[in-house]
View 1 (cartoon, rainbow, N blue to C red):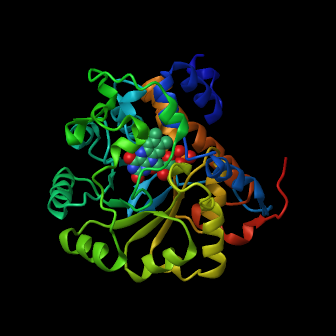
View 2 (view 1 turned 90 degrees about the vertical axis):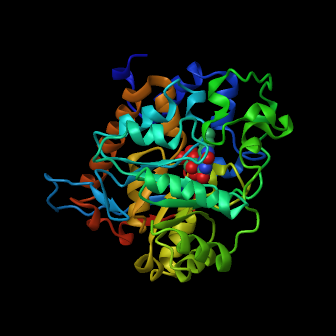
Length: 371
Ligand code: FNR
């Protein structure tokens, strides 16, 4: 369908499902085991309702904010996802260019299908790029990668900690494993290796994280990272209140509460529930570092709920992959404009004219699950 017939993110996902190869669809949409966490990530939002305030001026409404000090027109960012070329020949570059006009910040995956240099070169001077970091088990190799992305102008490191081993993603494993080295999309550009060389039993996903550090600790890894770089450090993959507290004690700059979009630990709690508990139980943590969530965010109302509960911004993974697969760069722009309209409408109907006016008392958690 033409882009002007697309009115929400679900429409874009439908188109992506039609245009993607079976394997690309399986890799993008899949999650662990029975995909319970995947479904609950989204369903959790339906347990939180708004307590709108009325009789407040909203003719002007400004949804812009800052993430780690960097400007963004909306409280959203791209959560780094591997292998965007599987869905479109311009892959990650579509996302970079599509984000440029709105200054949405792109977190680039360690397993991007373009080189970090190519992605940086495609970005506009006013655009901010963050780097999603899978730490190699060999510190020297990990350090080389950090130096590379620092020199290229990436502005923060999101250290992923929820993927120390590959999980069981059955849709991905079942997808036809007739790999062809010429299939550009399956090349992890930055390792110069093809996923084709690895163990087929693990699926595409398992093949990507074989060399990662499985022995990271708060005591060792964070001080090491701090000692080698001045870039802000964000821990991606916090899954409970206790670890959010430890992250604050470790003095990192931010945490991304995430279960990897349901793709790692099956039965991990939905990020929105953890955010809610953190806000209720440990509000001080939000003064020490920035808190973000990702997983299952598909509507402006989802974004606004998370912001009310203290999230500085929220990440979206699959929606950006689907938008660029279905329509390239303009699909990414369209997706952002849909979210902008939804966010601004929600804010106005809640009586909020700027992000700072979105507060925890404006949402209520209900203990029934709406149909
Ligand atoms: C991911 N994600 C991910 N995370 C990460 O730290 N490094 C990576 O390389 C990838 N790769 C990846 C590939 C694909 C196809 C998906 C769908 C996801 C996880 C991603 O950053 C993010 O946490 C989730 O995608 C958020 O959930 P939603 O928005 O997809 O529901």
